[in-house]
Image (cartoon, rainbow, N blue to C red; front, side, top):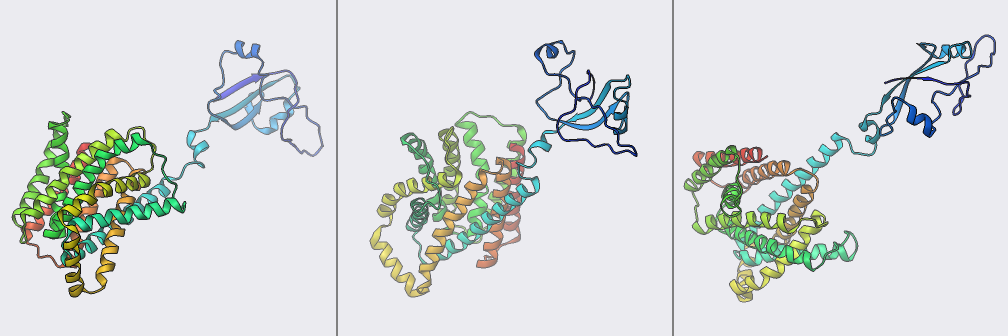
Length: 398
C-alpha cells in the first residue's frame, strides 16, 4: 500500500542513515511516521492495520522515490512517501512451522514403518500358529508383551505416563472389549486359513462400517459410498469362493473381526472425545485393559494343560527357535499397532484409510511369496477387486 504523510521537521531516530556526497553535507531529516497520539489517530481518515507487520518497500520525498530525494528536505516540499506491503502470514510463521517436505517425509517414514512391522508380525504369527495352533494363548501373549513394554517405558520414564482417571477407563472399556474380540477372531482366522485369505476378507471392513452406521446408528451416506461397497463385497465373495484352502472357521473369524473392529472405532469416537491422551499411550492403555479382559477367557477356552502339551509337541518338531517366533510375533504386534495409532495423530482419516489399504496389499503379496500360497488367477482377481473397492470407499467417504 502507499501512505502519504506530512509532518513538521522532526529528526529520524533508529539506525543511522549516511548519505555521502562529494561535499560532506549534513542533512536535516524527518520522521517517516506521524505522531501516534490519540487525537491524531481519531482524526485520521484511514488507519494502518497492526494485525500484520509492514515491510518497507521504498521511501521517497517530494513525489518521487529514491534516497537521493532526501536532499530536498527543508526546501519547501515536506511530503514523505512510503511504499510498503503487508507481510504474508507464511513469512512470519514459516520459520516456526515444519515445511511441507519435512511433513511428507515424516508421514512416509510412519507408513513404511507401519507396513514393514505389520508384514513381519503376520509372518511370525503364522509361523507360530502353524507349529503351535493355540490362537487364544497367542493373542494373550501379544497383548501381554505390549503391556509389559509400556509399563517398563513408563517406569523408566522413557515415555511419559498418561494422566488418566476413572472416567477414562470407563470410556475405554467398550473399546477394549471390541478390540479383544477383533484381535482373537483375526488370530483364530489365521490359524485356520492362509494369511492372504484372512486379509482379503478383512478388506471388507468398510462394508461392515457402512452397514452398522446405517442400520444401527441411523447415519446416511452419499450414493457413491454405497456404490463403492459393490466391488468390496463382490471381490471378497469371489476370493472366498475360489480359495483353495477355504475353511469356514477361518472365514467366520475374519468376518467377526471386521464387525468387532467397526464397533471398536465407533466406541472410540464416542468415548474418547475431549480426552488428551497421545496415540501411543492410548493404545498402551487399550492393550492393558484388553489383556485383563482376555486372560480369563483364554484360560477357560484352552487352558494351561493344553498349552503345555501343545508346547512340548511344537518344540519337538520346530526346535528352540519357536521361543523366538513367539517373542517376535508378540513384540511386532504391539509395535505395528503403536505406530499406526501414532500416525493417526499426524495424518487425516482419509490418508490413514489409504495407508491401511496399501498395508493390506503389502501383507497379502508378501505372505503369498514367503509361504508360497497357491493362488488361482480368479482368486487373485477377487482380491484385487476387493482392495480396489476399499480404496474407492476411502475416497467416497470423504
